Image 1 (cartoon, rainbow, N blue to C red):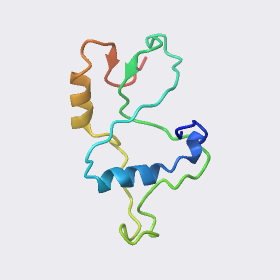
Image 2: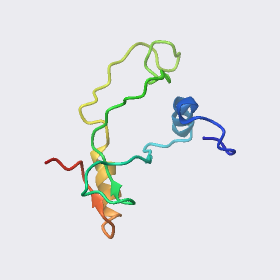
Image 3: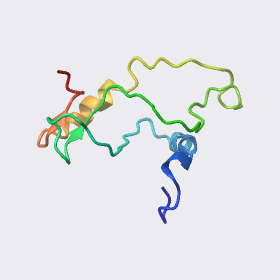
Image 4: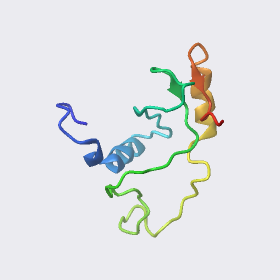
Length: 109
């Protein structure tokens, strides 16, 4: 949230950050987040590779490049979100974490 930690997470221009990575030739992004769980199977410090998400944020942060407002990304586009994360990248990341408590997806009771 800025070098001085003075930018609210909801005010970060994530699209600009991703666009800069694209301009530098980046093809994959690994991101982290901090949150809690009500499931006793997860202990503080456990790493969980999620396979789905629900965005409950209320602030409109400009969620897409494909809203018809950009010259570089013309037109409106509907992107499939059935599998929002790259399975190949998830599997490679998981293979690096075999020494730690890592969960492949959410636990269902």
